[in-house]
Amino acid sequence: MKRDLFGKRNWTILLLFGLIGQIAWSVENMYFNLFVFETIAPDLDAVTLMVQLSGVAATLTTLVAGALSDKTGNRRLFIAYGYLIWGVTVASFGLITTDDIARLFDLDAAAAISVALGLVVALDCVMTVFGSTANDAAFNAWVTDNTKEEFRGKVESVLSILPLIAMLIVAGGFGILVELIGYKGLFFGLGAVISLCGAVGIFTIKDSPTLEKKGTLKDIVYGFKPSVIKGNPPFYLTLLVMGVYGIACQIFMPYLIIYMKTYLGFTVLEYSIVFGLAIVLGAAVNVFLGGLSDKRNKAKMLYLAVGVLSAGLLGMYAFSYFSGKLASLLSFGVAGFIMISGYILVSALCGALVRDYTPENDAGKLQGVRMIFSVLIPMLLGPMLGNAINKAAAIPLPDLSGADVMTTQYIPAPEIFLAGAIVAALAAAIVPFLVKATKKEKNNAAENEV
Image (tube, rainbow, N blue to C red; front, side, top):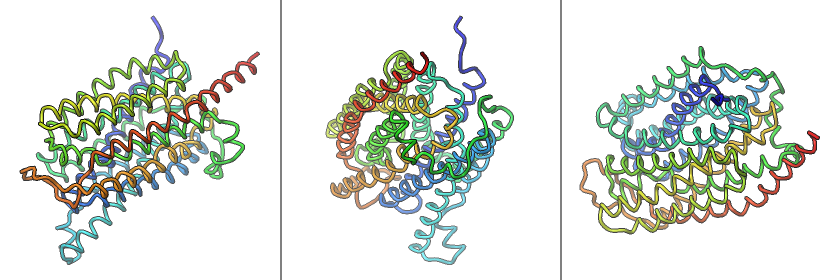
């Protein structure tokens, strides 16, 4: 019987901290959008600003925390205590209401809304600091420390499915929970779960035996040194692919649930079913492809992944014009399955390639560079492009005849998927250079072994 090289303990830690972390990020990146729309101010500009500032906070935090985790030679404490405090900050959102702010500061409705928006944006940045310390910097470095190239594709394929599972839980299940216990109960409950996860981590997480104390805080700029960039072309070319792919996804992702609820008129149950089927089928396809990527050229497989992602987005754009609820559900679901399959595969391949070509013992100090391409650039440019398209289309809110219908001057437009498809296709132009760089790297490694 073939031995599991990753180990049961590590799989448990990966699944627990990976899934809880992604649920927390999904709440921030998707559900806070609905929270703002429904309780504070129905404004897509507010959603865009929140996403952008979160990206800045996440990147700066990961640069510092990644270098610190290398310097101390300890991922465990950053992960465990980071999750503990992360949960507290998530729970704090349950305390923000415009009515309470108006009473506390004796403000009129307009002023209370402005203060509430400011508090939400500021607290979102604080939450991101602890989340990025625990998850983006320490947890991602821990995964790199504990995986090897021969089984990294399998681990990465599982890890890349977790955001989609989290998206399903947040998009569907949290909507039902809000109806049952309200936003306050939801945020308190989620915060408690995240903090509990951190407490468990104190006793269960073990750092890699090969992890050593290395570097200083000066290593924050390590990943930007010309010598480092020149010496690791596959690593940086993969990050460039991730950046373009990330921009494509952020053009539509922050507005996806709002789009389905307003433009398509889907109910919580309907878009949960569409999400659920697409994610389950997409995940099943990618479990097979993830294992296959360990035996194939990961860089070359990006051609397939980017093509599938672009095709899915084109379908989501075209099928948005189908009339009739059933036809709309079926067609958008099929296109969503194709899109999500490509989405997961690109993410898994890029993640595995980044880990494959991360210089040994430098995983922590390079997490910030990864965040610039995977988070900062996409979350600054993607929502800006998407919201510009929404504003230009200026589609008014249709009469959905529902008590919970949101109102705003405009709603997300189908063209955000078309723009996403075009930008995603641009990533394919970088792949030939990546293929060439990885081939050269492997040849050099083989020569050094001889």
